[in-house]
Amino acid sequence: MSNSNSELEQGFENPPELENSGMSEDEYEESADYLEEPENLGDFESASTEAEESEYMEFDETLLQIKADVETQLSQAVAQTSDAVQAENVFEGAGNIQGIGLGISEDPSQSLAPGAASLNLYVAEPVSVDEAKAALVDSMGISAASSDDIPVNVIVTGIIDAQPHRFKIRPAPGGVSVGHTRVTAGTLGCLARGRRAPRNGRLLMLSNNHVIANSNNASFRDPIIQPGRLDGGRSPRDQIAILERFVPINFRGGRNYVDAATGWCWPSRVRKELVYVSGGSPRYFRVSSRIVACRRGMIVGKSGRTTQLTRGQVTDCNATIRVNYGGGRVALFADQITIRGTSGNFSAGGDSGSLIWTYDSRRNPVGLLFAGGGGLTFANKITRVMAALDINLYT
Image (cartoon, one colour):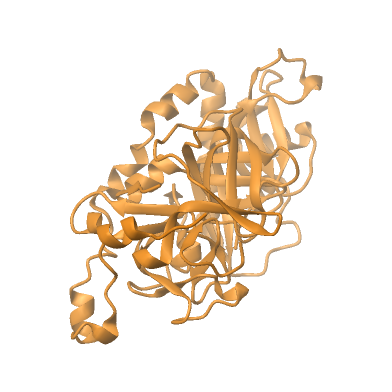
């Protein structure tokens, strides 16, 4: 499939280059407003409020209260995490609980009607339902969880890690290896543009903070390369964008909703399509720009650097999890999508940043992949990502 990229090249500005700008570095930085926190950071937390309220309507108050109580304790636990070596019993009791969500009971031994609402309890080490409930009651003090009327799905994830197509390709499509020059490699999700001037004149690429902004440790105009460093990419030879904006990750126990960032692209170096490899050759496809809300049971797909094109099923739309970023840094994420692959794993390390879309002819965007563990994948809701970064998808 040929791609002249004439539409992209004519419709957007190139990113500035310091060497040719005629400005000193100080002047350049003073003129750069691209890393300012979006004005709507306080608003984006409610970006999917309607869908979330609808999602919760089928759950009774006891389940919702238990989930809220566990979320509070997870937040406190993350705030207390340090660089110290973990104790041998770190995964006992409450320490074994990595996240909490709401789903449908999967255990026929609990004598529940098919499709009954249930707590999804994500754990690092395998435990029985009784042991999981004991952790909630004895270690977390949540006495309501002791009731036989409270169904629990115990889902083993291990430690949930932030996950780190490998070839160089120009123009670069979504689904291929990218990264900050100090990051191994992740995935280019898709293209976007700002919602207002001057950012609506910039062609942006969407990925994770931990992929192209080095988990908060990056600066405006840092180079973004394709492929990522782990796959042989080097700057300036392989640069396709500069860092334009990121949503800071809170490692102090506060709730995060997105791990997301944008890079300002040279239009001639990227393309709208996503890619997967079939028969040794790249094949391109487009996704819709029409967003749809997450729902349990939804079949979704993604194309990513490591596992390429995969299909999975949404099992949870409101998970709260703690995510390990390495170096003793752990962050709490709320209102996350959980996905299980329908045939093997949905993702692996290096797929972070992949756009997740409905696996049908419409291919409507649903989420942004950022973490995984124990055969499960976790994603930010794309509505929250777009609101936090003040962008519209350009697909």
